[in-house]
Image 1 (cartoon, rainbow, N blue to C red):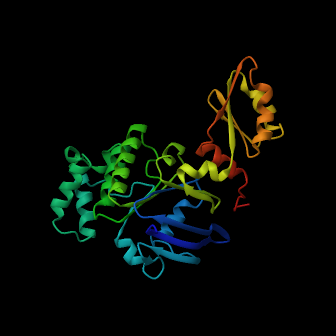
Image 2: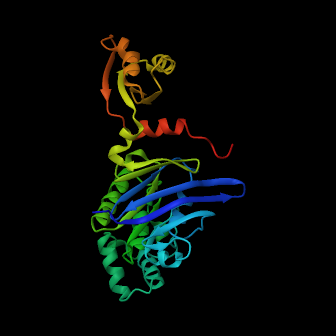
Image 3: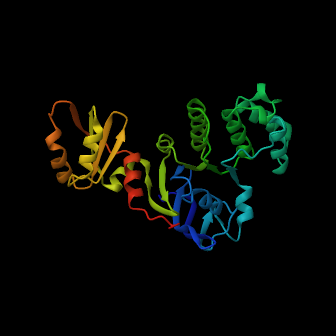
Length: 308
């Protein structure tokens, strides 16, 4: 049976002046999936998300979100989407309860007080209901923003760099809540440049300079890129790093703490390149599973800057 797609867009392009900030972007997002947009700052992630939810019209291309045309029916999409912006966008001089009440009234929700009380309880914010948003830490602001974006029970959540500037525990708690939403059938689009967050996603689209480099199930990214990797541990790796970068068969060398991850698409050539180091005193050389970070670094190496 075919999977229902909540987003199906093709050829989205957006120009700002003479710069093509999003170039021929296409994507299909299955219902109930967490779809990550992974890329550096300025790669076009936010602009793409805004086009997907009808906040920004593409210069060319089109498609649907939640079954509605993203251009002709953008208003219908906005009513059914929860959007959490990169910057905290609620009122800092209002309390948590006041902010949620304001959002509930914007959506014309019935039983505003009951809806707000339920949200405060769900997000464990009842003790902070009367605290000014501006006095909250980054983690609590993030939790309040997610509660506000989810208040009207949207079918699609769009989260733009939602955990920027918060501590690791708050990020982990946030992702548990997002997974809970997805388990209830809510589809989630999230932009991030954190690799450890990308692994939380079911699907990932790598973006750079306005272009989609690849998109696939997170578990299949390494296979799609077709990189093979060896891990080399040891001391004084700087000289080895420089030497391996010039060795035939090695296409990429990345430093991970006290180890080097050495990658290449030609497995036999890569094996020959690292063979002299195997068994050599001072080094531990073992095959490694290619991860998202190695794949992303490799793809970025071939991407062309759209501002040059």
